[in-house]
Amino acid sequence: MATDFTQEIKDLRSTMASVREVTDLTALEQQIAEYEQQAAEPSLWDDQERAQQVTSGLSRAKAEHDRVVGMDARIDDLEALVEMGQEEDDADTLAEAERELVKVRKAVGELEVRTLLSGEYDERAAVVTIRAGAGGVDAADFAEMLMRMYLRWAERHGYPTKVMDTSYAEEAGLKSATFEVDMPYAYGNLSVEGGTHRLVRISPFDNQGRRQTSFAAVEVVPLIEGTDSIDIPENELKIDVFRSSGPGGQSVNTTDSAVRMTHIPTGTVVSMQNEKSQIQNRAAALRVMQSRLLLIKKAEEAAERKELAGDIKASWGEQMRSYVLHPYQMVKDLRTEHEVGNTSGVFDGDIDGFIEAGIRWRKAQEKADAQG
Image (cartoon, rainbow, N blue to C red; front, side, top):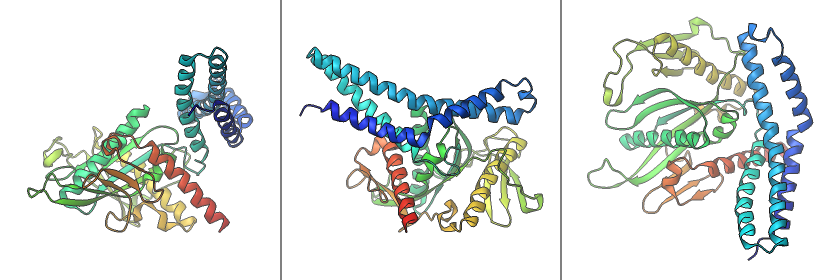
């Protein structure tokens, strides 16, 4: 059936009208002008922290503005391409328009999803922690598979990542790992990945080739910024130092540079071992600790403790997504019903569909709760 380009373009323009309404380009342009004015001040770099806030704020505002304006231009170009193909009855030009329509439709959809990220910390960078749950060595292997999945997702999009801590299991895989994804809206996107993930497969570690179910927990917190007010008294922190280790417990460091930080009142524990010195690991651990405590504080204020990442249990009855490799191949999100059959693609980082469905589902839940 021939594509109804007129209707398709009309739908794209309608979606973009909603995006512009939410984005408020006029306010964004005023914000850019204010940032540019501040950036032009000769004394700006006298205060390094403020200078970084101004430059990163300007960069984010410009990117947001250009993303919307640029999309309008892409739709205009698509319309011109269609008109040219139809006027000249040129099949090749119309085929090119078909291909461009698919790309523009996907890009507009992503832009629409971005407008749904309006939470207090959604535009922050994210700190992701993955922990092996029930399932023994298979769970540790699954935790490592999930870590690779998220790092590949970030790599596909060109988002910088930094592995902050890895605790290897004895036989294979990871007990836990923590990494940072440093891009605007990393937390808003990845926060919907928080929860218990379940893997069903023939275990490569079972010499009888039996099917094994294993679990891993994913926790996502926003990266704190200098403007966040979280002061932790020294007497509330217990700090242990130990030697960094590699796979199988092999020592990769001859000095006690790794740091384990415990917040005594809440029992929150953060480990860091991937920096070169104890001082750097301590600073990184403190930053993640502050991020976690900030979420706890906000959750207490809003009486939403049940939604806290720390409440995730990596076991039966708690899973939010299943990855089934046997007897059939399917990854299914149990909240959104979004599912795909290409399991290898998912484990290679193709998870945008799950993230988008999760964001839409969360927004619908918020709307339903508000109407209550």
